[in-house]
Amino acid sequence: MGRVHVDGGKSTRDLIDARKLIELLPLKPGDTFLDAGCGDGFISLEAVNAVGDEGMVIAVDIYPPSVEALRSAASGIKNIVTLLDDITGRLPVPDGTVDIYFMANVFHGIVANGEVDLLLAEVRRLLRDDGKLAIVDFKKIPGTPGPHLDLRLSEDEVIGILREKGFEVEDVVDAGSFHYLVVGSPL
Image 1 (cartoon, rainbow, N blue to C red):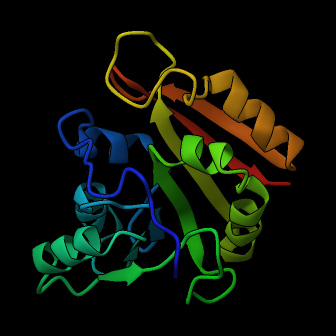
Image 2: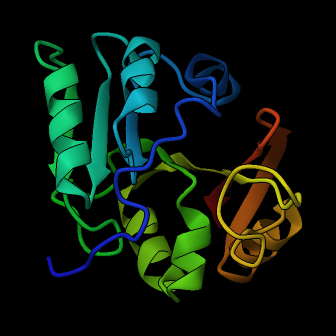
């Protein structure tokens, strides 16, 4: 794993209300939730409550200190698994077992790095037949927190990319002052 994430270690904990965000997702008890590029895991830890004892949260990040911080915070929680791995490669997760493949503040970087096809192939492999891809990213508004405006993707740009790659977009939701949520599924 020679890849490094340029924003590794940064958290948007102060910009996203994890509880409200989880409530926006089609997540229910018993589901498997994969948090791709989980960072310090503040959203993963909130998802644990939503999936309940019968569900599972898989939190993946390429940045070792973030994964270690989450492992420490999740100590004693039985339904969370942390993985130090690259989400654009094949994850050690069985085919067709994920209900919600979630990523927050990650997709713009995947697009900038030209890794959309790699990522979406893995999303397709992991999702159950009725599984959903949920993308949260920064609104393309000048003067707001987040990556440089040139790196940001508007909701319409994300929708266009997903449709072009064979995904149906089912919902677009305002996810706070600085973020939007796009939910889709493979056709």
